[in-house]
Image 1 (cartoon, rainbow, N blue to C red):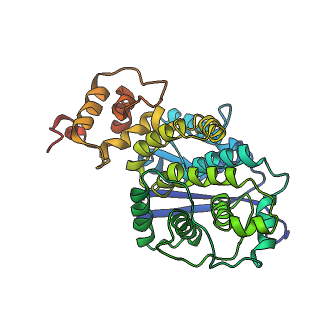
Image 2: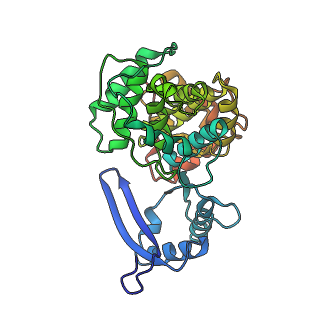
Length: 355
């Protein structure tokens, strides 16, 4: 809010990151509007104040609304063109969490419909019923979950990190309760149900399904079958990538595995909706951002040898990605261009992977 006019105004925060430990807030500029041209000009003005910044910036990370990603004048396109005019490369690195939210939203809407307002009607109804429930009497899922032990290990590992984000931790705890009642957590009273809350669909869906038997007795209107499908999707397909999105070296393999899991998901409506949404955001697979996979310690040396061979010898990147695609298929000569423009010492590409 502007102190003088007492009106809400648009603001733009510009942050420069060297690593997770080196973030610098350049400025928070007030904007007359949220249009792409004004956002771009604001960023350009700030960059011009620091003569060396454009020489060391390699990537731009951003949320993915149309104002940023629009192909005919989005902020990111304008920034890339500006850097090109300075004979510099700027690589586009869209925020993975925001893209994952779009995938989850598409899956939810295809099962339960798009709400007409800021809240989801089913979640609002659940808030009204919650005080009537015995929160100690809930039911875990009564269907077999593939790779259950591995999923539980992943959840426990993430919980051990003691995340400061309470909604992240709540999603993990509820996911564990969905799988098994071996470890009990307190199920919290429903909070914000707005579409703007990233994890509200995941958290609310799990809570409702855990109390499905009590809610049936209360004539709660819901397709619990669809709700089970959605919870399965969150836990078996969505969860791992979401919680590892901050690790850029993991994003490529996680995205490839996620895409394959979506294409093999048993619920056809979710499969189609999630695939359609994800296919619009395959930057980490179809662009040179796949280079990050070179530094993923989970990938075996033999595969990394193929990746290096392809970036030195392959001209055209794969265009169709499906369940047969391997991670080395994502590499071509554009990956070498990407690495060079990061000003890295690339001597390691000529050494044995085993070393």
